[in-house]
View (cartoon, one colour):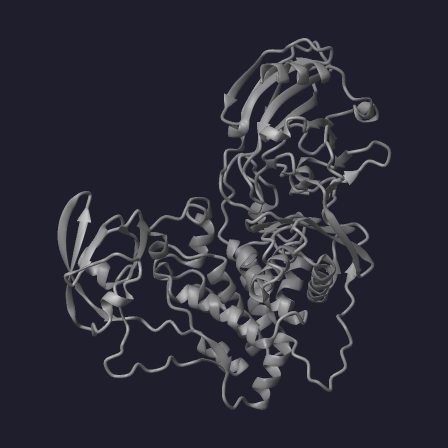
Length: 632
């Protein structure tokens, strides 16, 4: 390893010739060397301006926009050294967990920092480097200085082996191979880089080029079909927003047997499975993911809460409106798949039902409000534990359900003249870019669109833990929750309210639902379930052991807690009804049928399809402004 580092140091003593024309001002230059990809290492060289300076302070972000958790990216830096423009070593000292100060003594025009980065965390917010491919995100990769954040950053990639393609939203240099540029550090952070042998399908929507970039898949993905479907989602988004704010766009789709997605201004990074394409339900989930991340192109990327207009990459950025950025986006992801003609009404209502069911079966809805969930994302959402379901809710899930209810409020209040679509378009028009929006401004605009004061609706639905009122939305669209089938006498299902895991024959409690029979009996997470009603428990499925037990019956439960055997008495209750399945009412009125069809963009067989309303392509995309205070 020492010999490899020495080789890297010696080969980087001289600046690459391609950088010559760009060595000016506060420009930052990076050289990424993939020669150690087999061991998951990336060798990085960063060159900073040092003219007339006694020292230069560099830092690495601790989180990445779109994923609201401090992830301590600097932990992956293994070695770090500095030298002047002629190769002489410079003193470097670490001053904070993610900051270093380099003493230059005004004796050099440039400082060159070399570091080795460990890249083996396969997610949309971190880095992965191996012989097969590499995916790099900006925040966990690049060091910069506070002074150069608004200056151009340039990236040269070397020793890329047999990889045939580099896909990224960074601007490709017209003369130098594997050389890319970003207007500023924000744009660099906002542009993931995918290296490897890829399948690329280009398609045009609204006169703008888009790309679906597939890496992996083992021949199980039909990229032609997938790109065709994604193009329909793009069209549905353009119709909703009425504006195209980018010059080109890339869907980076890594088929690597994991999941997730992260939004960017001119691209999105997604991860999925090779088996997702062949399954109808899993493919719809992938389309929903693509729809979700693409909707973010407007909502949360260019249209931001004021607290995110300028990112603080070294500290948490607190705001209570994440439910708008993520929740309303989650409302639209499946809805736009439906409007694009890629799912049926039944499939869409099943998706919406699933979100409602998830919310209503989460005890945390009675403990944490939606606005508090947004504010606490930094300490709660990405750190779930065995009690999370009892103590918190997801701003994705409840935010999506709230989006549905808010849409109905606006439609009903305005007599069908305005919708949530109109609210989001107007919010974008007034508050995009450096302006940003506040919670107060969002709510005022929503009331304006609805033609009535929605203050009380926001208080109860967003700022409190009161149960959501679904009836008004159901009545407006002519929907209902199907009633659960009645249990026959003697066949009522009872429950304990525990989740169980099995390891080497030991059946242990992994979660206890608040208010359940097990909770009331004093059963804890970590308890080993030995027997129920005098019979040994050997499986995580308690159905056989509870068969024949009726609501109100009492049974003895034998547990082991840290080696001590205890007896608990379970007072069984009927399992709460969880049937939140939406369907049309049996006899909807003509008005209800019309409202539902307009909402879902259902087409009548005799109706000629005219295509989406043409969106306006902005001549100067919002992403690229010299004075922009926010990311890329």
